[in-house]
Length: 565
Image 1 (cartoon, one colour):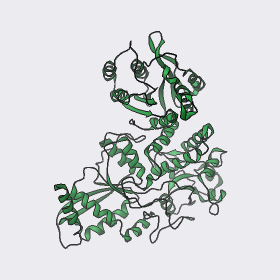
Image 2: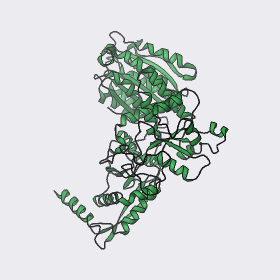
Image 3: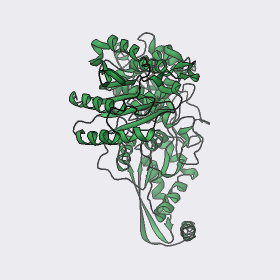
Image 4: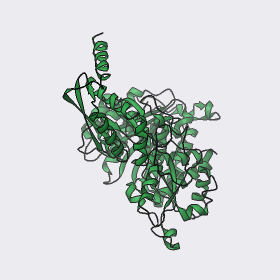
């Protein structure tokens, strides 16, 4: 009751914003995506000069432009999580309010940082994700008269060299991520091996022209209408509508066309996130500022910086690209909570799967893949045409191997009990560069055959695999053990869980990080047992209760920095 009284009093005090006079000062620090920051700052100034207060205390707002990936990294570090592709956060402090460019950052943070639970989350602006093309190139594909879809783009990317595509690293850019999700969905419509190959081909085409920074990618577009320049520059890249508006505002020799492809991917939706731990008075001030951003005049401020209102409509003076819709209803319906409007139809697992594919294709790594071949792997999987678990795992391994670029090195083991004398594990292929050993590694998948009567020698195998990676650790690459199992440790002659954990803690070297990823197959695994292992080494546990979903879990595991049951 006391909390309710305080909240009610705070809210009533906030309702007196129009009252004359205030004293003291509540300092509200806002970090906003760089493109929207000027509009937010102007609105905040107008609000505060108009007498903004909470319970008679004046409100002062400081708005700072902040790159969304940098802020996500900083927030993730505070909550003990490192997002894929971002690394550790900088020295920036966490603000009271963060206006990110997309709710996808929130989904990624909540996936890897369980303690991150901001409030509010309403969208304050939007910018559709488009495919940017130099106007002469766009005209060759029928723009502006022909309406293209992502399937059309996918075909042009994977058949011939007509388009030189690029992308801002989707682990660091929300528009790049939205474009990647759209392409992955287009490639996956057919299903099966052919669809996966098409998806991998599209990602590799994008990776060839990828940039870590948006500014760097924009520099790769042709700077003249000369045929050679057009042929060697980037000819298509997923960007936000605002990126195209800002680029064309500088009157470049070759302007960009914005292609609004169907189906429309999630727009950048600029969620208004009040950070966890903000006190009640600041929270009330944050609510007041967000309501100020909902006033009709803010739409015109957004138009000045090339952004739309949350409902997709535009304010006065909006410099719409040729062919742009006057409004984009349905692209981002106004959000009413911390899931944000970009979450429509997308969850963290879908994001992690597509980033897992991207990571495997673009980042150099070394992985020792360890497969359970105990007798229980003969269990049939009704959802996979009654194939047994071993067959489903073989299919997932083959599919996963196609993702790994030649920059990777891969080795394979199998384990059960008494696989090599008293050892419960056996090396099939040592860690080998895929440039020369891809065929050998691929052939080794056929060794994933259940051993009749074999038990699960999990603990001894885990310790041996970790030591193997540590002894052959390589600087500058992601060093991982990827272990598949469908059961609990059942090795009477092996070490205990206590001994395994103690040994792992003793040999772990922070200067030589090894990521231990365990994928549990079916309902017979003990997630607590597996998580006790990864807690000692770093890594994560991913359980597929339905073994038919192993491929999806595999992609999620590659990307996510932490585990998920």
